[in-house]
Structures are given as C-alpha cells and as structure tokens.
Image (tube, rainbow, N blue to C red; front, side, top):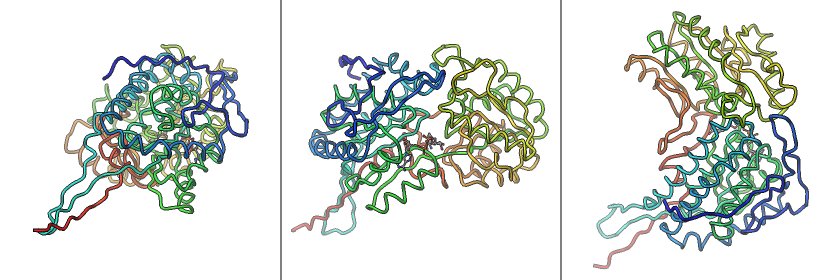
Length: 491
Ligand code: NAD
C-alpha cells in the first residue's frame, strides 16, 4: 500500500456538503434538513437536501470524468484507490467520531468498519488486472475473444446501518473497473459519506466520485431513474428494492445489484458446544448496532434438550452487557437510529405479546435513558411460525426463539419466508452441519459461527433478500459488460 498520501482535510461536522464534479456544494435548492445524534437527539448538522437537479449535475460530472478514468488504466486506478484506502485509515479516528455520533453504532464495532473499508478497497485495487476477457475456440477460421468494459456511471444507494463501510468499501469494485460513481447515502446517517467525499476530492480526479445527500424518494429516486445510469447497486429494504426495480424498468434496461433484508435462522443442535454457541447466538444478533443488521440471526431454533438452559444463559449474558454512550469504548449496546425505528420495534413487541409469544427479557427502553432512541435487547420465546414477529424483519434488537425436535420442521419454517440472506448451524457433527446448511435457502451460511464477513467470500441473498453478490471477485466483474469480437483469419 502506498503510505505517502497524507490528506489534509478537516471535516466540519456542522457543515457537511455534497461532492459534485470535485466541488463541495450545497443543494441546488438551498434546502437542508436536520440530522440528529440518536444517542441524545441533539442536532448534529443540517445536511444538504439533494434533488433531481443535484443528481443530474452529479451524473453529468461522472459522465464527463469516466472516459479519462477508464483510459488511465488499471495500475493508475489501483494506486488511486489505495491512496483513498490509506486516507480512510489515516482519518480513521476522526471518521469514527462522526460515524458513531451519526449512527449510534458503538465505537468498538465501528472501528472494525474503518479497517474493513480500507481492506476491501485494497482488495479490489489488487484484483484489477483480473478484469479479463477470454478466447473462444468456436471455429478454426476465426479468432474469437472477449473484453470487459465498464458500464460508465454507477449509482450506489446505501442504508443507514453501516454508513461508512457501505459508502467506502463498496466503491472499490465499480471504480477499479473504470466506472465513475454517484453515491447516495441514507438520509438518516449521511455524515461519514460527506467526510469521505472531502477525502475523495483530494485523491480522485473531479467527477470520479460524487456524493449526493438527500431523501430516498427524491434524490434516490432521481438516481434510479436517471437514463444515463445503467448500473445501479442498492443496499436496503425489500420494499425499496422491489420499488427500485420497477422504477428503473420504467426508464431503461438496467443492471441492478440488490442487497436486501433478512430474517435469518440460527439452528442449535443438542450436541453443539454450548460454551461457543451461546455467545455465538448473541454475536449473531449484532447488538453492537442494535440488531439493525440484514445478516442478524434473529430467529433462534433451540433443540428441546438444551432450550431452557441455553435461553437462561443467554439472558444472563445479555443482562451483563453495557448499554450506554456509543462513544464509550466499554459500551456494548448503543441507541437505535431514530424515533420511527423505536416505534417499529415497540409495535412488533406489542403484537408479539398479543399473539402469545413469551417475553423473556427486554421489551422496553432501558431505564434511565430519557433522551435518544434506546431499546433493551429483547427475547421472545414460544414463538410460532404464524406470528407476525416470526415472519417479518424487525431490524432491531429483538430475537424470536423457537423450540424444536424435528429438523425437517425447522427447515420448513426456516425456508418458509420471502427472505434468504444468511443462516447459521451449530453442531459438532460435520455431516449434520453440512446437510443442514445445504437445506437452508440462503446466500450465506455460517457453521459454528454467526456474523462475520470475510474478504473475497461472496455475500448476498437468495429469494427476496437480493440479487447478485458483493465483496468478492464476481462483484468486481459485475461492474463490467462483456464484449465479443470475431476476427476472420485471412489465411
Ligand atoms: P431503506 O430501503 O429504507 O433505505 C435504503 C436507502 O434507499 C436509503 O439511502 C434511502 O434514502 C434510499 N431510498 C428510499 N426510497 C428510495 C427510492 N424510492 N428510490 C431510491 N432510493 C430510495 O432501508 P434502511 O431502512 O436504510 O435500511 C434497512 C434495510 O436495509 C433492512 O431491510 C436491511 O435488512 C437492509 N440491509 C441489507 C443489507 C444486505 O447486505 N443485504 C445490508 C444492510 C441493510
């Protein structure tokens, strides 16, 4: 990695701006909206409210920059991406302050996101030379071969839960392949993307990376419907993903990666190593960002033989976890993103109780947190597959526990939803592990683990959890179009 790329940027959290064509700008309308700290509801910043006009300007700038960026070649692009990765690490602690204040995710976990962002950018920088075509021995009188070309301008729309990592790391694949990017962060946690924009401005040629802040229905929609944005990548909810597909299709044929929601099963067999499975089930819930994670293993299937003991041990561990200021290194659970998200969780809890699920722990905000958006880790037992809680993504710190004896029934319940993102199987028996994992219709299965993503291992969903895979080789190739040539040999 090139280590001599100190970037002299002092991001002012109170004055975030968009990046369009290498300039830090206000929205064309001049409108801004309030962005608050979810830990205490204080105003952090007023953020430019981008509209179709800003998106058009950003796409125009990205179009202008794209031919030269593609022509620069892999080595130059890789070097630039590496400098960006290095700048993210250099600014890591200051980025973290912004990220944690804006998202409420705890600092110790978000530190990993900083490292992961740089690692993924470097991974794609290194992969660039693999953007290869092929030769095809179709007929003896010809030379048939293919090359890979970038799409042009890529639109990336990301959700609120890992703002920095989704904004930064996922620039690697489109950029190394010679595309330019317009990024639309979530309106709920846009500040680290604005900071990244200021870093990108110092490193990339103008227009290669653009950041447009604003609401989904306006700025997001305009990006999806822009006729010159042929390649889109979206991370967010199933409902928005379906909407985006419809909306894009009204305008043009577009290639879209969709990373959507999950309601992921974690299945514990009675022979599992309980010392690892109990913390594993807690880890799988991703309480570091309050369960607001697509990959959270939010449906826990406990075999009857170990059900009560397992649950009691989980509750004991959860009650010892420290809920508090997300900037405190010792905190293990911070606030949720918004009042709306708290109300969603509250309504899930109420409905689960009405439908007969048994509240084991949590179910309310923790005592003593008078401002901010807090909710205690919540576990429901005796959940049955017909319950609303069992069928829908909470995107919060709420775990549904099912008691089981028949693995065929577990598989039927596990696969009985529209989701198919991840899953987890805990057993000491290799055969049971593999055969069970194979039966789960999800894009990513952990065996005796839950939660982590690994570099170069593809992540993405089956069924309504998504389309396409990210974080791996095919992700890079998906930002290219294959073009075929046939030469008629003259002798
Ligand atoms: P969301 O769908 O509400 O919003 C995601 C993004 O889409 C935001 O930037 C938003 O502004 C934008 N958007 C909203 N409406 C739009 C529209 N009409 N056109 C274009 N853009 C629009 O999701 P969220 O609440 O921010 O995030 C939570 C969801 O994201 C959960 O369902 C979660 O499972 C999912 N998610 C999936 C993954 C994955 O990798 N599969 C990762 C993280 C989150």
